[in-house]
Image 1 (tube, one colour):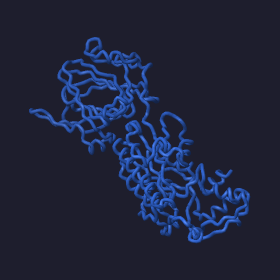
Image 2 (cartoon, one colour; image 1 turned 135 degrees about the vertical axis):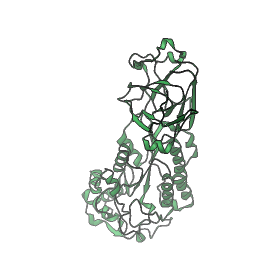
Image 3 (tube, helix red, strand yellow; image 1 turned 90 degrees about the horizontal axis):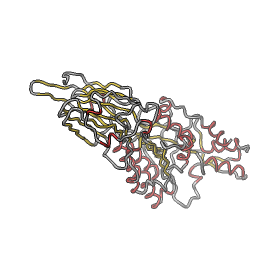
Image 4 (cartoon, helix red, strand yellow; image 1 turned 30 degrees about the vertical axis):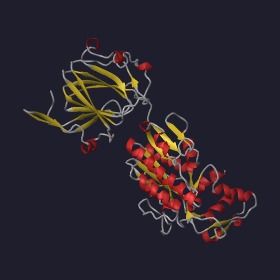
Length: 468
């Protein structure tokens, strides 16, 4: 019999993420009423914000009607509209809890949240029983499902009504035993821009496994709108956007301007839409170029953006778009150094070839090595850090480009006095092509990411290791 007057509450079960809920049911001689799913109240009580997109109803004529055990690649909220059911849930996800069993009775005052990959089955205990489930994905023939036999000896479910006496479909009777079940894999992480400096660093840190998918420009080009339909996006938990148009000077030309906006804004907008619609965490790498460089001190995450050139404007637009995604991290960084052509390699090459360079000495910032960015991104994701904007650069005293060039010369055994400091204006005075304006101050405050538990590496230590 339905219990009236319960307080709303969620309780963890023996299966991770499987939550039993008590629902307030208000009744009298006329019948009863309940809020079957109320987002604001249920989030406060501990229900995940799972974003349902479909509502299904299962009606069962007879006592003992038994369905399952099915594991789907989506979350579901199961509640009873009328009648009473016995539920059995078996964890069919990859991992240490695989095979764990939980059983309970559900009536209109008791519901359950079933996370993706947990097998669920139901046996009706009263005639004319109807139960309702909200799911956060649409059925698809391309989705990965898993099934378990209702009579599996390892799970040893104690059915209230013996399976030999109940109505079961032939298909459910033919499902495999636990030893032969194909586990549901975790949702994947997609790294976009996998062949760039940061993408290669992410691959080196995360490694090769089915959990991580790496897409270079050939596999996913942000400037090509067709990428939106290229995947079943509900299979992804996280997208790390390591792709960007970064030719800051070329972006000042008509062709470059179009390419920069296509990759850094339009493409990012499509990624953001995908993430928002599918409950995906979007990690987006931004730039010090969103600032004009006129602030006397370090830029914090709360400072207003005022980009100077086209590249900075497109990155600022991308930041604004990504900030609308419910689950997002915007990583602002500066002076990135990784595998491939970069400032440090150029200076080291000039030193070895006996060329004495003129290097800008009126722009100040910190180097950021891609290994640090990759480690910082992983830290935020693994520790469920608060969503939002984080500055991430190397740590230590800020320097000018010229000072850093001198460090490169010294570290490679050359005389740092061979480096001559010049102003930005003088450095570009002979340029015949458009030159993007640079922020004079690119120093980003690191307090927020440090408070989140990540310690950026001292940039001079990273520089020595990089050259070593």
